[in-house]
Amino acid sequence: MRERYLILIVLMLAAGAIFILFTNKSLATNLNDIRRLDDQIKVAQEKLNSARIMEQELSQFAMVIDNALTSEQRFSFDEINDLKTNIGEMAHARQISINRMADASKWTMPNLIESTVTLELEADYIQIGKFISDLESQDNIIKIQTLDISPAHLTQEEEQQAAGKASRYRVLMELSVFKVKKEA
Image (cartoon, rainbow, N blue to C red; front, side):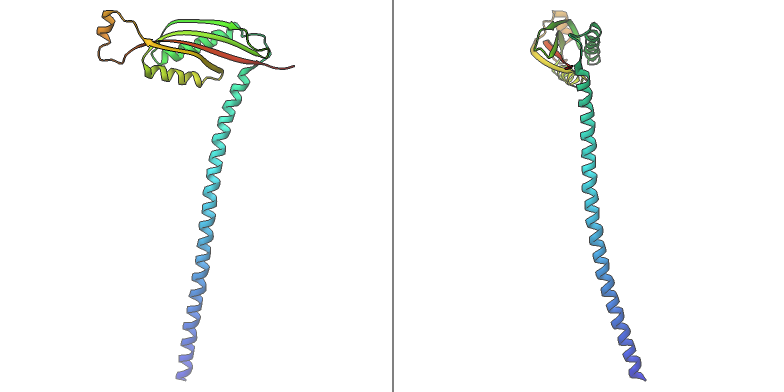
């Protein structure tokens, strides 16, 4: 009888050990599957985020293209005035003084309409950089044709007031704004 109990205990221990081994193996397999799926999810999320960013950039680019297409033969007065107003607002936001602003239409290629805006500004280097960055973020095709930076000519009174502040520069900038004629 005692032998039977011993055999039963050994069988129960063997069954328990086998159960623990199979459970451990199953658990390890499941954990590996979970890690693999987790890695796949992370990669998919990164791709999704990249796709969202790309879609956002493409929609902004589409807006620029939509604004650049026209069936007109030249820029309208309203478009030129809006552009000059936007430039003035950007300069005001950056505390840049505009000494002169003039626009002119230019003859270009047959499918292209170009208008130039000549600016004379007074600002420091940081303001100039931020202003150019603001220009680049506009919904138009803008090209800076010329950029000339020279020290600003200050009176003695202005020099005394500006002592200790960032140096001011006179900036001459010629911008070209383009539109593409739609083909019929």
